[in-house]
Length: 384
Image (cartoon, rainbow, N blue to C red; front, side, top):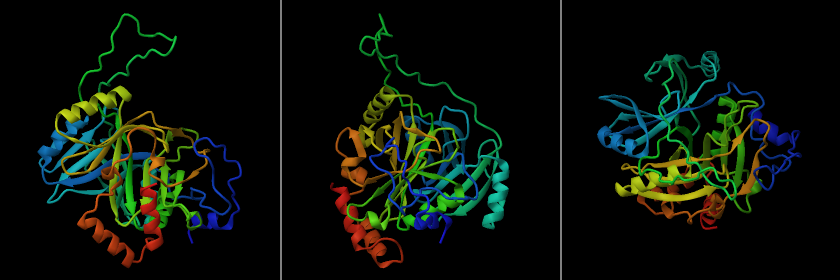
């Protein structure tokens, strides 16, 4: 049993001081503590996501329309970036099919790579990121390739879209001036998070906590099945007293194993809305939005790219330091947003397809955490 699960099982560290900062309740006695006692390293952030696509020209057109900048382009790869200084936030490599490869996380220190490689029996190798860098390549329990990287040079910052000056009640900061946000792409500032589906949720959760030192902000559980443990986790990096994104990685139990969506920070609500109009005029399809989430609180707007990958514009997300304990809440569709239109079937992945049917059959026959009760619970949550 891993240290993470052992901590939960012995009940020694009961969450008795939950402050209701972000959830109606905290953990019950013996539930998962949401962090590992002695992780191998503590990653600092997501660095980038890796994809393969056959048509890099088409991928670049959408990327620019969505608000990415191009950090580098070669015959075999397209590196995308935000306006903030740092690493690129996505690489799309030329491949025979469109598929998600995996995430790359940023190591806090170069020495973390050496330590991680020793503990995991791997090696430190060069990585082909613009500006150079090094990587340790791992495989998580779901089968996703996971890179932990340290970059040699940072990309310089680019010009920002400035937030609009707003009037509030009697606080009049804009006088004799009109408000006309331009109809242009929502300029991406940085990569915020990635969401993954897995059939081995508990194993994958403990791997990210034990190996990369991440900690849980919120757990979701299925109605009537809380005693079986959570089925979704919103996971952040542990930067001590420094407040960071509510979630850098989110995972949920499901019949498939794969990418769900990724999220990219933009300036504000007007940037989200004006950028959405720009995308709509160019024939792209909104999946769900605009609204405000509950877990994480961020403003959101979800779109599909030409290869059917889902990407999110977001702004104004929660920031937690290491002393905020995990919240616990039931999983439900109605619990996805504070306000906004109802979640669509497309966003929920509820539209039947031959691949989804195959996923369900394979999951129920396989050695994993999916069983008929879990499947029924997930279907109920989707309609609740």
